[in-house]
Image 1 (cartoon, rainbow, N blue to C red):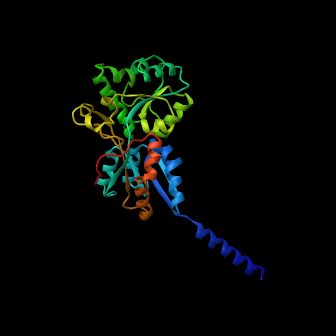
Image 2 (cartoon, rainbow, N blue to C red):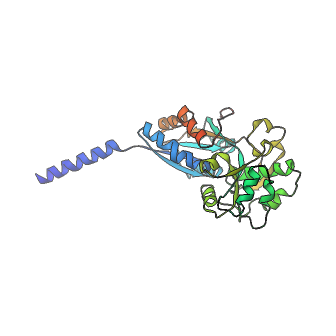
Length: 303
């Protein structure tokens, strides 16, 4: 009798656990979106749907290559700039991607930096921002242009700044080599290092900087890659080549700083994935984007 009762109890326990088990939705997203995705959008979505969201934040190009190569399985992919998303479209893994937000480039600085007072003057227009970055001993951080669109956009912004301010050596003086190992950090760790004072300044997305409540210096529209009106006649003047992860050279040109979301064709939970993408464009999620420093989405769907 005791054995029968124990068996019944175990069966009921397993049945209850199964009833409460929730599917896990895997969302791979550009690492700069960590705050808004992990603290706001994903928890809100979990309260609306019977699902657990598993977020993976890394450089968008690195994620796209992992997904394209079959080394990562995801339900939803959220990219910044069209390039990484187009790779998955070309591979037949995505048929349609929709814009969900946009941003622009800024110079963020650490409140703990010994250069903080000078950056505050630059933010107020009383000092030239690039001259602060050229000062000896300043520790500058950025992400890898081989794997991350943000890392590429840093270089493009500095190329445009060199043209805009008529300073042809600006890129070399501040960035050094395009893949400078002394400056390159992973995207999720970059702003954390800035917050802690391990580095003095970074070039990054306004959306991520404001999400972390960090001070920053705004850049002119001719430099920040955030105004589509400058894309054809001005932004197009920037460009460079970087070594690909598997050899060869990749030609990099400016692309709109727009975040795109898509359901993967091999998603394990396609219905929930479609609901998540629709949620990203809903008024609730759009307010979360705005509150965390993102600009409204612009442009047409891809695919």
